[in-house]
Length: 376
Picture 1 (tube, rainbow, N blue to C red):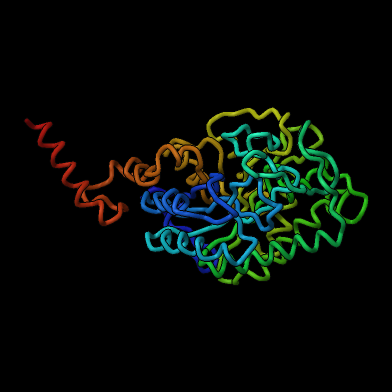
Picture 2 (picture 1 turned 60 degrees about the vertical axis):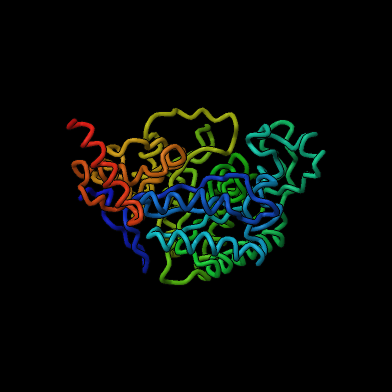
């Protein structure tokens, strides 16, 4: 058995292998409510053999949405649609996770397929109005974007409570893992980075003070989340910009998170500024996961153009990370995990181990038919 397909146990949850479908916003919700699209979209990964399937970023406040199409978890009305998804994922052997986030100064924009910028006339014509965006200060994400409202200390406590309320809803919906979104330029990342956090109170300034609010949120969430269930944090390990977050900052943040009981660091990069220069290559973010794992002594997930099962196997075998997270390649190939299992274990076997039992008989018939044609 390959190392990639060894189980991983975190607290009281055992994930059947080291593969995770990374959270990917689909922008297909209405009023924050998950629907049949999300059930089918995520459910096919559970059928495809993935270990952990992570629900997309779910907004803890209505103003914390990126777009009008974001999934939300700011109200009890959101629980039942999410419960349906978590229940299906678990019934198919996957671990059900959900990412909890707040878009901050990157909120109130178009869906990517509409332009991925400030709301325009097309959205306004159908009643999709802009809303207040918030951040540590008043620096907008980019030229032409809404200027954020600088959050007062009392407002920070309200947002922390929104994250806590979302934790309870995630538990009620039946998820096994929660992930706090502190990456990609959204609210908590904007507090962490010196490029966006210019505050002069206790929540800004030196590194420890910039860490303060994200750590307060993470600690409050961890205290509410059941002790036998794991909690992850997704970070941008570097901003890819001079003067921004570097990996040594992320290592120190990870050490602090480990002390409050966070179980895994999900290591991505970038997203704080549209002017970042990101050197893309296969597995380009793996070194960050490796550094955080080694120097902060905490499990990590590696992400970033991991498309080849052999590369994924190498990452796990060499101890560079404890899980691999896949996004776009999973969309292109929902059965990537099962195909990787076959590729890494000398072509699999005639019993189609890992495949859903309902598929096995048909796959066996397919193999017999192909063999018959080959022998003819």
